[in-house]
Length: 388
Image 1: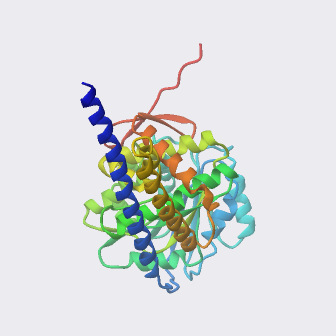
Image 2: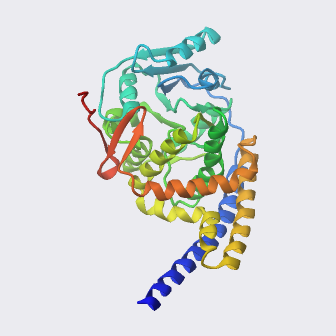
């Protein structure tokens, strides 16, 4: 019995060490892939098509007006409709929309206030209420916490015109707008998510479709059942991409970036947000999520130190050097430092903790509601506990 237990302990140690080594090699490949991917970028030409920008809003964010403004400050010759939606007449985001109208008096900025519920996903309910007000054939959906560069629309339209493309999505890097913990959250996006997303897409290991941007045409949206088809899906962006792929069209990922504005004010907010995101990915692509642990070679090596002190420390040193290099490359591509590089080991260990915790999560907090996770990525709202 004792010999068997020792054998199991030794096996665990070697598995951790092996995963760390493989993960370090993977991160080298991810860094090289990311650099080559963005080296393909070309300056797109100005376009003149009419575009509707969909912005489902919920609450005020530190730089909401500036983020929304970036989608109007475009190198674009055609008409732009910025279609914003809220679900409560007292939503603080309404003040941001009014401020935006004052800043851009000639722009078409439409606000829809509609509390009509549709399923468990509040964001999708907002989009369903916005859908009848879309004015143009080209539809670009993006989350409220995104900021775009001036060539954003030109690049999207160029990619959308390619044969076989049914939609266009974009990778993103992080920017902390809410203090220290928001920068920690942003670092996870720039240093972990970005290289992984680019690697998966470039090597056709994944078909990303992200809330950062989904650009499509009105006919394609109608063909997949409109937004109503995703009313009870938590990972609505992923589901939209899968529905488009099911119709034989491609969701393109051109070598462009948008900025995700992280706003987490404390550790608890960061933990809940990342746990929800991790559990969502776990449910829609479980095998890929489990395999994604190799993207965390540093914490894996640290866990191996009790088993193999010298080998574990050596593996951790190599992993740290590689992770610092990948973080540097990601920030260089983004054009700004996401967070101090000394946060790399802290960020990686936190990501590992979220990964482990997310394996057991069956419900998540989202916009003040508790959502129960069901089969095939679907969700149901937990009933509120009645007051005594």
